[in-house]
Amino acid sequence: MALPWQRRWRQVYDKDALAYFARVERVSSFNNAYGVEYTKKAISDFFVQGKDERWLSKVVEFYMFRGVSNLAGCLQKMIYHASAGPELANFNFVSGDYKSATEGIVVAQSDFSSGNDIATGFNEVLSHNQTVDGSAGWLRFYANASNGIHGCYVSTGSMVVGKRYRLRVKVYLPTGQASTSTLLLSVHGQPIVNTFLAKDEVQVFEATFVSTATTPNVYFMLRASFNPFVGANNPTEDVAFIKDFIFEDVTDSPGGLKGNGLTKYLTTGFNQNVLDKNNRGRFAYQNVRDETANACLGGSDVTLDNNLWALINNSSGEQSYWASDTSGGPFSGNKVPGFWHGISHENTAAKLFLNGVMQQNVAISEPTTQNVTDYVFGLNRAGTLTVPTTSRLAVAGITQAMSDTEVLAFYNATQKLMAKLGGAV
Amino acid sequence: MTQEQLQRLVALGVPINIPPKEKPIPQSIVTLIAFGDSLRATPRAWAQLDATERGFLELLLLPQPAFTEEQRAFVQKWWLLCGAETVAQINALLPANVRVATIEDVNGNQLLSCDLLSDSKAGQTYAAARGLIEGLTLVYRVVEDFPVVRNN
Image 1: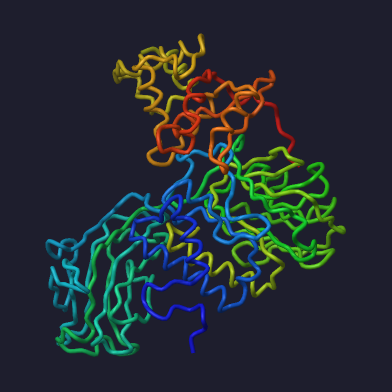
Image 2: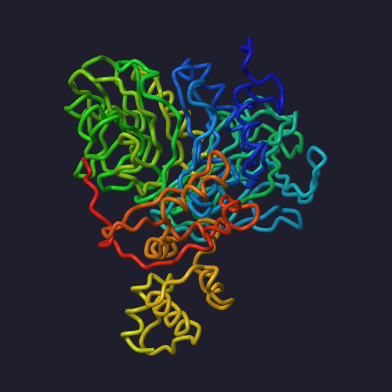
């Protein structure tokens, strides 16, 4: 039985997601790269997953720097604590500091409206300009089961080993599908999407991956679990419709807001004394990581070395989670972009995670809860911006303490959201 | 175009690829260098620039739609002189969740990033304070002009 917050039918979103949408749309809009509804559904699914898995209630503040169309949208918190208010305050950021999800170098694309275009196939039947859900221009393909191997082949153009690519395509499966049918998207034979699909619903598939080969092929296939193509030359079984295919080089593209390491920061209005010192955490999803000594978010009411609660690099550029009065906190030698999350789980212990994997769990000195509000893209040191970062952040925020399992689930959901909104790192 | 001119161009932070020696340098780049030299010698505000000079700056500052790395390098070398009183005036005009804040150079001058000029037209983030921002003097600074911040 569906829980109350879950979607019950198409175009119905989680209620907390709806509240966020309303806040954004008062001042901005959502990214229209593949339709606003696609972006909203991705965000709504994040909320639903968080409630299903019961970690969302531990996310106290969530700053979202993706999915919106401009800087004004970035200032609307996706999740906020009542004491802090729903908006971030912008100091010195300009529109050019925000990179949306739309930016990538298009390698190949087609809407298939005028023909099979970049699609060819083997042992299948292709028909162009089909109508789906009242919309014309879809490419239909289904198996010619008299042959053993089937597929719809879409050329992606040349790829370069090591580059990150994003593939997006609209897919529709009619109701006549066999229940075991799956859609398989693969690049050079390596599956990147392999899943059961809902029927009679236009869906947008997106996958971001690092190329390990230069062969410029993407295969679209339908297949049953063990016996590919249960249908036999039948346009109502094992048939798929595709449209709006885009294949982009997004190596340098993951969107977010970029600091300048000098003057730009956001104030949160969130006072650290709201949370217990042994029940709190900080996170930041860094697309581009500043490897100097700098901080993503945090603050201190006195000096930088004392009473600090922050996600901050140490002097060697290693990521650390400063969670104590004087002795710092856990750190990691992994100087890489990703989802960093520090957790204070006891009065005298703290953990640091990278992409859901614990890097260090250390004893710390007794922390002191401070009467200071947080900055993002730097630290609020008694009212002054210090150690600002040049990192490009996709999200950042504050949590209560989470279990290791919850940290991993929160990361997985965030990573899925990032993959849909411009590329994960 | 001499090597000296090329070096001056790079020093100005102009976001272009330097052509090989054997290729002719477009006249527009020569003009751009002259403009940069002129502005460094005699700092002026946007409001004091002529149409051609404003065109140069717009070209350099226009996000595409996000800044390129070359543009970021450029905007970190050009700043707007802004005293505390003017900062207060600007902030009084801006929406409640938008503010400007200065950084201090080693000589105690208060500076705003010149990229504010890229986001001050009608409908943009700093539009409400456009008149004041366009009246701020553009000055050239390099990293050595800023104090070293203690990290931790």
